[in-house]
Image (cartoon, rainbow, N blue to C red; front, side, top):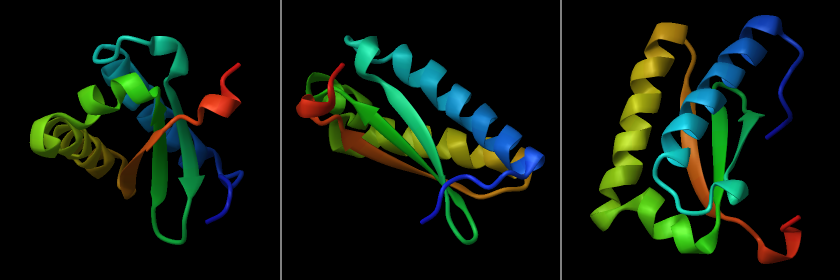
Length: 99
């Protein structure tokens, strides 16, 4: 995967989706200081990499992955409007990289 290209439309769409995911996830977690969303452009889609603290990982994934599935559903619905494919990867923030 490569970094985000300098196309204004793609960049704007990725920024909007990052902001959407950030707002939703901040409402779910206990430690909002460790929430990060990064857009990584692929060949035919943009991957949103959501990073949260280890204590919040369960809150973001939910029981049997229901919360994560709901996040992906919202992302898919919003991406239809923008006519661009987005996927969501949820990762645990590396404690060594904490500010």
